[in-house]
Picture 1 (cartoon, rainbow, N blue to C red):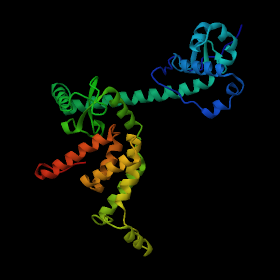
Picture 2 (cartoon, rainbow, N blue to C red; picture 1 turned 90 degrees about the horizontal axis):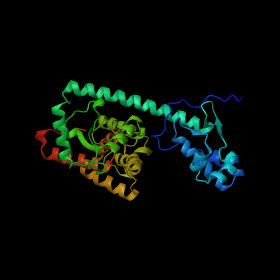
Picture 3 (spheres, rainbow, N blue to C red; picture 1 turned 180 degrees about the vertical axis):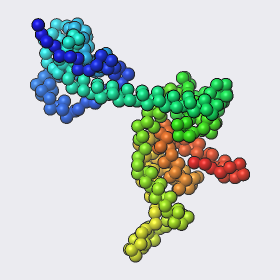
Length: 328
């Protein structure tokens, strides 16, 4: 009697809602599979890996030649001839299924991250429910505000213009003190809402922007407007005389701000420079730096539309100073 090993992943290891796994290209290209097998075998093996990722438990396949042949996109007689090569790396376990040794490791990592994300999401949802209960942001009053936000935004997601499965999202999250008020609420579809939440939870804000903003704040403390309007010649003279050159705020905008905007929008360098130049004229360098930093911290999905709204709010506040200043 053959003594099969225990399954390589728990029975509840489920990656069906995860679209992909990390493929070590260098390891694959150096493997015996690629070095010694035909293109047909390599393709069949890749098909089987992908199918195994979407099975329950993850990284496993049923030990049924007909099913495996279908997964490998091959006729059954042909699959039988290449099965040993195509299933290289799979091992039969005590539950009767085939598990891929390498893929099982990736599946366990992905599943653990998924569970951690779900636990954090559930915790955040509990905190949000408590926050809404304490501040009266639930029930009829919240529903009235929610519907007003949807009407204001034309019944469409402000990020992708989808009109289905809409959520009323806090621009500044409730967990960070954001209020359930019109100016802090926007319409997002479920997909965009989930993406924004994931970005916030993974804390993808580059640290360099925060550092530059801190430098600007220090410069303002030492003297309002220090460094603004300084020419390259003046900065060079300050450096040559042994002093510390004033902070070039424009350089901050077109270094950290430009690189982030290109990554976040996938727009060309010229387009992003044009947008930054336009916003500098409308907001000023220091306010623009603060706005860019806030957009990164909050994981804004559509930075261009979001910053344009900030510009409009800034113009409105400037035109009506008695109604309250611009609050970043």
